[in-house]
Length: 345
Image (cartoon, one colour):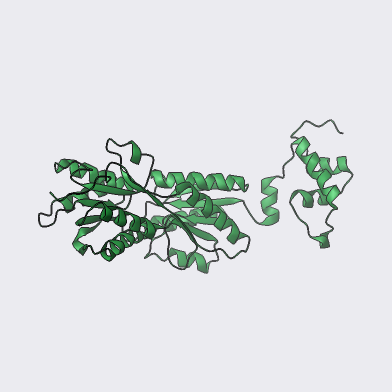
């Protein structure tokens, strides 16, 4: 064997060591099996792979991208990576992408349509192989534009009809909360519903309201308050709900944990004890939920798995496969904020 330091082998060095043509070595290392181009015998292919592994050789990624027209780079757009839910999902994306020898980079859109468009343009200029879109709006048109341009993409966390997506089964999650509160004796309830352009808000609210009404309960439209997804949005919405002298709910369902935490703050300012005077349930079961002074009941969304599945779905599309949308199953974690039986006071 030549006296070449480990890791410094070139394709030509490998070919010379094995007495093979460089093109043969290249095809083997890049996984090509086209017999019309002279596919190598299995034993020869194994010799090549064994030597490449031994000397630490790996194909040059820039050369590979020129040959395959792929960059092995995936773009991810989310409203805010500072959002703990999205950060956990991105962790799943990065893990699955790395396992598939892809790299990722993420950009924030702030849920603003104009910024969505700018960030999408930037990502496409970097020649990403595909996009994972975590900021889809139900009333937006950018997804149709991406489809018309044949840009491979999948939606993550939010769903829009007709486009491939990976989400928690948000409707089922809302249904679980309605059944839980009904079983605990609550008959007057309100919803902090989130942003109306997001499927997470719409589907979770729909699941809750539909099930509660099916059980015989009444939820007027005035008891459904749309809000931002953050703690301030939740607090403002809960203040509106609790300030209505004509209707005092015994329970509030907030469609994410941060809104629920804001609602807990509002309850305290109104002189209520969460879990005793007012039940509150959130959604996603972030790491904060169980650690609060009054542990928050929350629907557990498989956040890491959503990110992993988004990569799997996108890679399937890139490989020309027909991929179906995925809805992952949630479960309800009942804690102190809603565990007591409700007795009308």
